[in-house]
Image 1 (tube, helix red, strand yellow):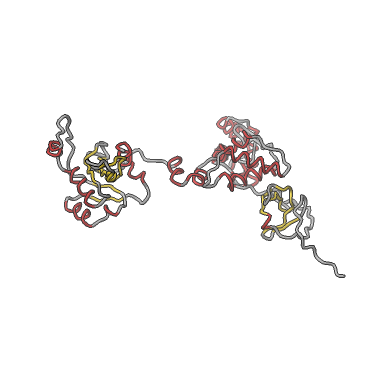
Image 2 (image 1 turned 180 degrees about the vertical axis):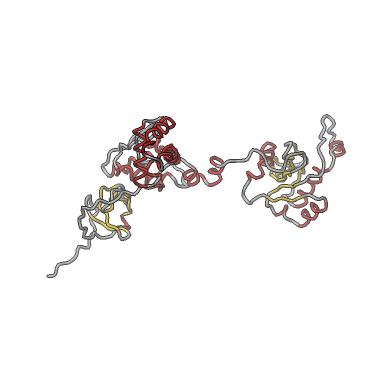
Amino acid sequence: MSKQERTLLWITEGATITNNGRDYVIVALADLNLVLAKEVGFNEKVLLKIGDLGPPTKIEKTNTPQPVVQDLTSVSEMEWEIAEERRRHIEPLLNNDYRKSNALADQAALAAGVSRATIYRWLAAFRDTGLVSSLILNPGGKGGKRPSRLSSEVEAIIQDCFENFHDTDQNPSIAATIVEIRRRCSNANLALPAANTIRDRLERTSGRERVAKRKGIAVAHDKFDAIKGSIPDADWPLAMVQIDHTELPVVIVDDIYRKSIKRVWITLAIDVFSRVCLGMHLSLDAPSAMSAGMCIAHAILPKEKWMTRLNVTTTDWPCWGTMGVLHMDNAREFRGNMLNVACKEYDIDLHLRPVKKPRYGAHIERLMGTVS
């Protein structure tokens, strides 16, 4: 009877497996469908899906040490800033005479608030690799990165949970992420990381990319991107006027049977420079080129006769005139030929803001929210 190859895959600690052509050793079982494994020849731990694992292969032992590659994607912005600042401090010592190095090191140490020995440690680490990331790995000195007390297995589980559980559009809470990490560690018979440790990791690595994955690109833009304090070319009254529609929370009812007819639409125009409402138009009809034109006409014309017809005599509305730029969104009623021709007739520039970018019309959006 010929010897047959084993066809069963044993998922146990210490077993050898393959994944995408690479050899791994199983360290622990992290979940029903995940194992914590270490690639042969490397110290980095990864989580692998059981469904992707292949049969074990013959692994030859080797005594050649393998380099440990720094995962730059896990480095926070704060750590990069620290590394770049250290690089600036040691810059004068990189290409200078050895006889002057002590004096330059003392100056760099004084500027960085560390000892001369720390400056030399930074210098040696950078010269060995020529990489700024080598200064991230150096824990010495003020403001350095504290060495982690967690095992590499726990670190791998935390990193995987951050990427595939916490940083998703389901937007799980920090408490739920802590429970999930501790559950996987418990399944793998690993020491449970403290809840405050996990919270600290999330706070130190919470950046634009994480907010974009969890809450969307728009939220990330509002939180991290710079927003100009004023719109250019709106430096005087009537230089730029924004216009838009909104449906009011007001229901029109029949005057006899008091039955609902429909909600009312309002079109508003605001002067960007003075934040004054220049014109308006109320209608039961949905927004159209007609309602846009009526609002623009109301903004351009004086309001005295209009207010007299409404018996409004206790206040004034002395705001009128032809605007220089008419700024609006990309709605169909604003892209019609009639509005375009009317603006050309009165030498009004028609500007359409980018699609789905309400922040480019912040003044009119805020006005509509206030009116609603």
